Image (cartoon, rainbow, N blue to C red; front, side):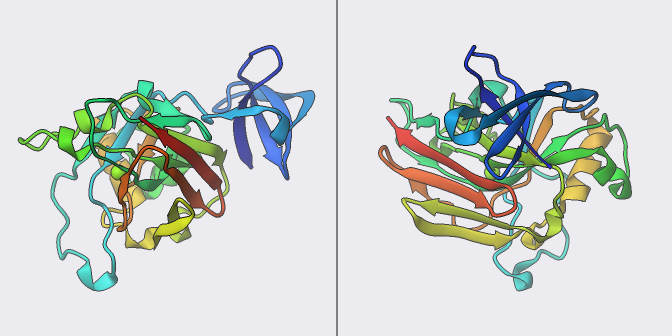
Amino acid sequence: MKFIRFIDNEGNKPHGIITAGMIEEISGDIFGEWVQTGKTFVESDVKVIAPLEPNQVIGIGANYIADEKDRPEKPQDIPVFFFKPTSSVIGPEEEIRIPESVSEVKFESELAVVIGKEAYQINEDEVLDHIFGYTIANDITSPQYFHKDGHWTIGKSFDTFTPLGPVIETALDPTKVQVEAYLNETKKQDSSTKFMIISLTKMISYLSGIMTLKPGDVILTGSPIGAEFLRPGDKIDCRIKEIGSLFNSVVK
Ligand code: MG
């Protein structure tokens, strides 16, 4: 099932279920009790926004190999995780704004996990029970703002630096999808999620050993090889066929 969020004629921001371009509006909590309101909308008539307001956004760094032969024998004991502020989230078709102080930004197309059920100290084999669904993230990054001591937070925190969407797909095998990015319609990233170094179940089990994960938490699972720099005027389209296309343009 695909959950979408949009702005209706009165400026409300309801969720809906989308099937073949038709949205059936719902009310309630997508992670709990919800009902269909009976109202329907045509997708092309409404403004689609990020499919949720995340509770928090957590990312993992450098999590893909280009080829099986590059797989490290032993992954790092402590994976490199970072937080992105929820204020950096935008939706499909919104503009990625590069601030005056920033001369370099990269795009990073990623599969993003949406937690649906509280998770604390769960094992890997329990992880899928706590996942609500999956969306696409573009983990926009300004490497010049990476701290020389190794902290990435500032370089990933500017407003508009976390496009999410277009929908949350609840029926997906996350081990078998292709993560793609097209810069000005030229393919730059195209990798199976099987090339993750730390698997999705391992990273969520690990995180749950540190902190309670809650419904609405979004976890970005890392970006394949091929991320490049963006410039004002560029169009960047992050795609996972089963979820859709997350398209954004870039402005100064
Ligand atoms: Mg990333």
